[in-house]
Amino acid sequence: MKLRFLAGMFMLLSLSLGSVQADEGADLYQAKGCVTCHGAAGISPAPIWPNVAGQHKQYLVAQMKDIKTGKRNNGMSVTMQAIIAAVSDEEIEKIADWLSKL
View 1 (cartoon, helix red, strand yellow):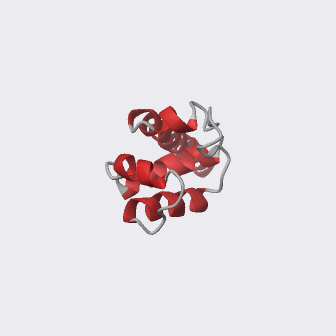
View 2 (cartoon, rainbow, N blue to C red):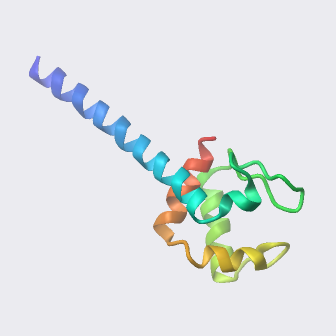
């Protein structure tokens, strides 16, 4: 009985921590200005900026890091370099995680 209770509590804690990270990703997406070009729900209001909602987390992380380091410098990535420079790798992970679940 105790073991079942502890297992249940662990599951609830795990779910709530996942929700906290998702909330952090959403908050960072807003705070870092991503919403300006990529839209409030990751759907861009203009065809010159990509939709980012629902993309695979690993893909989003790779693209953001490549833009940050200058490895990717095509299209509008030059504009994004100034923005992504203020985003840490940990924040990139949280934003990408949130976007991947939209």
